[in-house]
Amino acid sequence: MNIILNGEQREISGTTVADVLAEIGLEKARVATALNGGFLPAALRRETRLAAGDTLEVLSAMQGG
Image 1 (cartoon, rainbow, N blue to C red):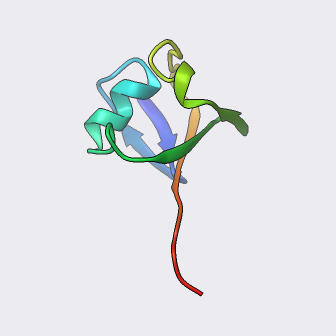
Image 2: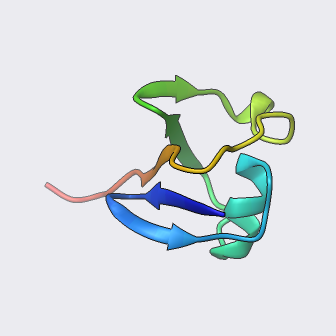
């Protein structure tokens, strides 16, 4: 299925947000997620199913000053 991941169209094989995070190697990372413009809490990632054309943003905190 095709989704928009961090602004780029991407073919994914997973069906949930948690599946996608595993596909891109971030299943254990502390990241924030937004689905179709709305914040998605980490507790809902395993049960939140994706549909073709969804927009998923995955953000990590940056350190520095």
